[in-house]
Image 1 (tube, helix red, strand yellow):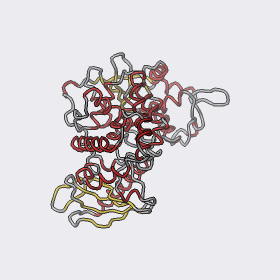
Image 2 (image 1 turned 90 degrees about the vertical axis):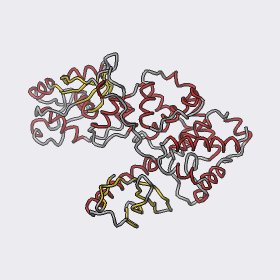
Image 3 (image 1 turned 60 degrees about the vertical axis):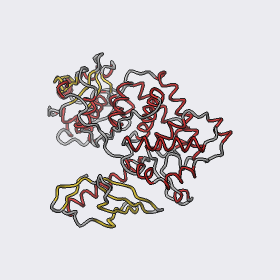
Image 4 (image 1 turned 45 degrees about the horizontal axis):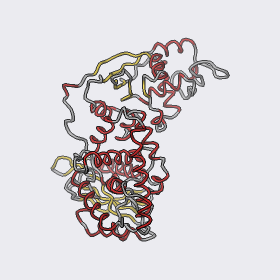
Length: 454
């Protein structure tokens, strides 16, 4: 986020978690060169400034940015993963703009409902668990339709079989479909409360439907849609989604992928996050609400495939989000059976990680001070999760348990992170970068080879 600087252009600062005690967490706001401009402390839900550079000006903007910082901290802490250490890694110029093909169309509400029923529009039921519109928001959308107020543009991506996935407008379409299925009555309307309040789409049993006039108006409504042609570069739909998705809260990158990928891959990711081994190894820390759990599992699948197919992860470009998008698209038609071996390897890696590190410490950036019983538990570090899980996937769990003591890697890793300044830095900032991830992978590979008895 940008802060105003005296006699200079605004500067982008990134949030870094510096340390924590039992009741306090400390943060820095630093630039891309890791120069610290602001030091912060979070106690309970109050964020206070310990120190701020005199070059930062405009207190009103600064206070506004601090509110954004607090919101980011709360969401990150709840997610269970250390996304403070990441940075935006979307690749620049990912496709030739001249190859983009998007057509405009009008689609009736009744046709959209039929296409959903026939499976021609993918509403992604798994993702709908995360929709956050309340009853009033849903009712006000339906009221807009009944008032014949045009809705904002919808975006769809069409595949080669003519099926559509929703790029933008998922909550609106889901609400429309729910209303047509009599799943909620209209409430707290602004203009039509007297005539439509408490009523459903159609009369059924003791549920009274909207009046005939409004029923006709609703069914005659057409939605304006832009449809991305399947001949367009696949990255177009991801880019458009990131640029224009208008849901109540902007979707994160994994939520976007979940909307646009195939059902089989979605099922596999969900199945892997529900594995008891995964929950045990991460101590249940990685939350599913914003699909952080599916994000780390997808990273394992991508890097493990890279390791198996190419012998190493050296081909990683350093652009995490673009790489995950590309992997997702490459497997959009893959079946669950295609991932059977990877699921077994993932399960095995989780068992090994829990045994060798302990569930309180596995995949976390730990040093000696973090091993104290009263120490604040570190968040899951995604770079460590990728490297540790991929490296431990091929060690037989029974052999590991027979030849090694429980938590035998815990102190060696804590010592390594504390003594290797480069590793500590790479695990603290820009962890998605190519140099960061490859160095972490190689150093852990050497540590495991010299420490694990096998």
